[in-house]
Every structure is written in structure tokens, then in C-alpha cells.
Image (cartoon, rainbow, N blue to C red):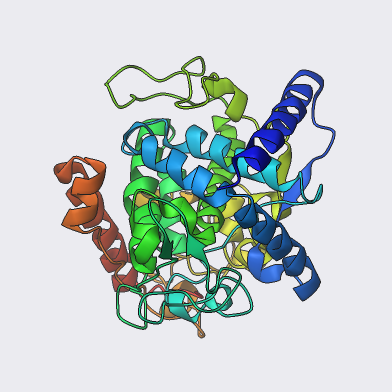
Length: 394
């Protein structure tokens, strides 16, 4: 690890961060869906990553994540801490390229067949390991230095494939049903967060998962979902408990950074000098899930949209912001809904997402009963939407 380079860059980044925190953002970068980047745009990202690797930054961040692991998982520091961590990584990258922004991976789009995503091709971050070692993509052939010298490891959880992740329907249901940080965080952390780490395997399933750039793409997406949720009237919402059971509030200190949580709450201000393209959703997600991401908007085009046309009882239960919001054309016929109005011709039934493993639950110190309840809820969600003949466009 090149400690001299790290210390010099750290001092410069600290100065930059203090300047932004005191005087507002002078350089707001846009985090985009990684799959939307042109070869030239991705090339700029890859160049920054290569230079950060040469200067030891991947080891630096893997070490921090490993050391703080228990303080930042299974409790309500989860979202603000990872936002601050992402911004730290991004600020360092901007010392090499002022326009550097951490892209996000819209994993909801790829949830049915993650291994088939273009993100896991040689064009971007590469795929499954050969003999566990990643050989293609931006980190192909890398030797990681933490916790010891080893190849970057990926080991998909279904051999050459990956079990389905949590789809957009369930995640947006979570976003509609919970107005407090504690429940919102639990349901995201114990579903999409864990399933992606486990599906990728290898370094991603360890305490030092920040070795894999997939970690940064994944957490940028989780942060994007939090940003979306915040925009629905939860901008100041911070509650719950930390690792030791102490109440978490805007004034609580972020582990490792020693800064109040309030400094990581507001995208586009203070030190959080970034924003998400599309207002927090990819164009495809906005197009196909508009009735969810913009829950109070009703148009004639939504008349035969799958989620919008679900029976009122299901909408009230799983999508409360849609309850009572029925457009022309989705009204029941003779007391029952038309199958055609509920389904999409090109869609498919929802698959069951892969549950968290006992090893993962123990590694994080999660309450097994809470995890089991959330897993059961997600399966019930799939069962009830499939029974209603809902067909997912994803």
C-alpha cells in the first residue's frame, strides 16, 4: 500500500470536503446507471479505479469496512454511514478526475437473472471467477492486498448463475409501507442488500466486501433508493438504534467519521455533492413503475398497468399510496377485475427471491426471528401478486 500517496490525497480531500461543507457544493456530480455509460464514459471510471488501486485505496476502504462492520450493519447507522463511505470513496476518485462519480447498478432491473446483466460482462465489472478469481472486466487479474494478498474472488451462488434477487415490485412496496427509518432499513437490509452480496459471493460475502467494485455499485443503488424514499416526505427521518441499543438521531455520530448523521442526510448539499440521474430512478424503472415512483400521479396511460390494476385490497395492503387511486379502464366488471387489466402480455409471474443464509445472519448478528419474518413476508407478497395474475415486466 502506498501510504504516502494515501496521506497526501487524504489531506487534499479533507480540505475539499471542509470547503464544500462550509460553502456549499462547487462540483455536483451525477451518479448514473452504470449500464447507461458509453465506452468512453466507463473508460474514465475505469481509469480512476486503476489509479486508486495503484495507490492502495481499495485496501484502505476494505480495511475500514472490515473494522466498522458491526457498527454499520444490523442497526440504523446503515444508510447514513454507507452514504458517507460512498462519498469518501468518490471524493478520493475526484482527485484523479474531477468529474468522477460512483455509478449505480439498477439491480432491480436485473433481479430475475442477475448473472445475465451486462454489468457482469467484460464490458464493465466482469463476471464469475475462474477458479474463483475474477479474470475479466475492470478488476480482471487484480491482486487485492486486504486482508492478505489474494485474487479478487467471485463465486456466484448458483454455480455459473445467480439466484433471483428482490424485484422492483417488492422494494417499492417497502418504500410505500414504512415511514420510519428503522422498519425501512430492516426491510431493505434483510432483503436486497443481503441477496446481492450473497449472490455475488467471494469477496462480496466477506467483511472486506469493499474490495469488489460491485460493492460500490450496489451501495450506490441502495443509497439511490433511500434518496427516493427521502423525497417522499422522509427527508429528515432518522430513528432507531445503534449497535449498543442507543437511540439514533440526526445528532448521533457516524462511526469512523465522528461527524453527525445530519451531515450525510441531504443529497446535493453540504459534503454530499452528488445527485442521481433521473431523480433516483433509471429511465426504464420510471417508465414501467411510474405508478409507484410517482404514486399520486394518475394518467390514462396507467389504465391497464399491472400494479395499478391490482384489486383494491392488494393495493391497500402492499401499495398503500395507490389505494383508492383507480384510473378509468381498471374498474371492476361485474364485481371482479379483468385478468387482462391486471396483467401485461409480455410479463411473467414473480419469482421467489433467495433468502439470506444462516451464515450471513450469524455473520452480521441479525435477529433470526426478524429476518425470518421478513423472508416470509416477501414470499407472501410473491404468492398474493401471482394469485392475482399479476405479470411483471421485469
